Length: 246
Ligand SMILES: *Cc1c(COP(=O)(O)O)cnc(C)c1O
Image 1 (cartoon, rainbow, N blue to C red):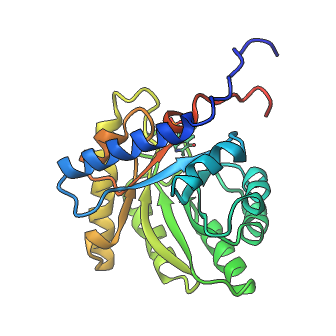
Image 2 (image 1 turned 135 degrees about the vertical axis):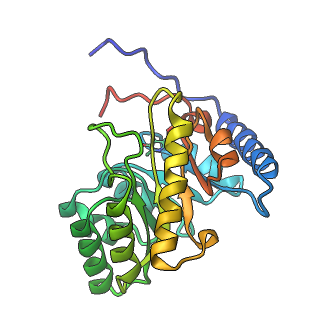
């Protein structure tokens, strides 16, 4: 109950300042990686208030990532309609309809890890007559049992093919979390790159048309230098998270 230290709400202006610094770091890492345009920055706002998100929005930022269905469906109507939402949490099949219905601005789900989930999403998008939904296949590159995601190898190719062939889904790429302590992340990131090569070879896709989502607050610059197209950054922008109220 009282174990965790309280997390202070950042002073007004801090979130926008952190965002600007993070965007600059993404741009610098992207230049080092000789990218033609900077990697996408997904501002991961889970557990954080709309007031902090609006600081980012007012600074021109539009791409936000959320992990929990209940939270994203509450926040979506409270934010402007042109926000581009990316769902990055574990998604249970029985919450698919609530997510797709409740978030009209949902651009992508980065955490699809089964054919069942892909099919449910495809059906929900079809029934709601929405434009095709972006999907990334989540890969468990660290082999930890606690992590969701498909095992690297043939299973990634199989699921990518199902997504690619689904009429109401748009295959965007591959996503991974990787080891929590960062030391093994280079291997995890290498693994995701290799998975992309396998998918592209098997499905006849151009590697430039298949994104990699990898890198978080602790390692997003390294991730961009290793080929990430989309980094998911939370605490560096919004401050430490407090889960005690969840
Ligand atoms: C929370 C979360 C992030 C952001 O983590 P930070 O370390 O706060 O940047 C990124 N990706 C996923 C999947 C997350 O759940």
